[in-house]
Image (cartoon, rainbow, N blue to C red; front, side, top):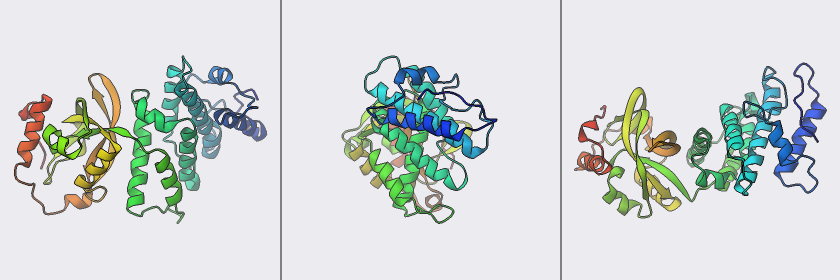
Length: 319
């Protein structure tokens, strides 16, 4: 089934659905797939998408079905081939992932979350778990989007907050997606006492330093323990660690996740390379607690600053 961009002035649903079916067959490795990888690559639009319509100016439902979803399918097919060793696909894949990230993977209205789940399932078929772990520098914006969706799913599952606005329960779908995308390793942003290598050696013995950075657009605050909050024009010194799944579980306990600290992925620059990395951010509820940091806490942060190559003068938290 050849791919073709059809006019938005007359939606030929039968043709559009057949093209989508052909893309699904190629992604799933169907032995009689009518679409080839070469034909798919030739069809990719200048904007990186694989939209089946000649414009995005259509009702939102049609835009999701025939512009965004074929782009997810095309990107997942390229991802699968790229991970399988097919050469020459890094740039087309990066463009396809960037186009996918622009949509947020979300649908419209009642079906918004269903579409997001379906989109993640499509990428899972393309090898998303392997891609997230081993190709962090290829379209970090896409990594950032997916990681933050997964943080949302994990937090909601732990809080038993899985109902949608119309009462629909996503618990089983979110758990299935989260289970298929468990990472063996990830990047973690330490901006408080976990910048201290001695402490991290005790807490997370498998952790390795990946480099230092500044968290741009975030300000260090000290309600009692260290925290970061979005603040335009501000930046916070930080040390980036690569941690294992076991390390992350230990950190979750130390940070009181998800009640005391939640998780967010942030785009950071490590020695000229942009990546998405996870940070713990204090919850609004926990910030209101009347707490005091343990003895020596600030001194430990300052020790971490010196070890990482930052000046102590850069430690300027807003209380």
